[in-house]
Image (cartoon, rainbow, N blue to C red; front, side):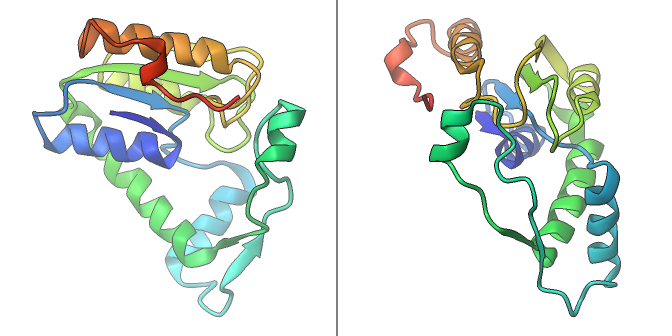
Length: 176
């Protein structure tokens, strides 16, 4: 399983519950949020924002690469109910990390404005992470950002080692 952001959380959650998952590559998975995002998520979870359906998203896609940012616009707003569900799911996955027994690859951008880089360290410490790499130039969308070629190479190498020796570069899609 390979997952970016919420997809990384889903992959880790599935691996914590199923033994037929061979390995997990977690790309910038958030276990918590910080700052205003964390406060808004808590208010949404507590029901304080029940009359507010969405909050504006001010910064667009969390990606350093200007071309990728222009080609991949983000949502203008974040639904508060979805944010509350994300906050709850992050806690579920955090509590299940010790049950992940499969090999784990953890990749994260050093300048991630969405998922704190400390989340990567926690995932690595609490799972059987065989490799952790913090990408020094990337933001949150690491599979499409300035170090996307490094991400693709890391994932391919990981899959070859832990899933299928015959994985070829063309078997994995990477946004460019």
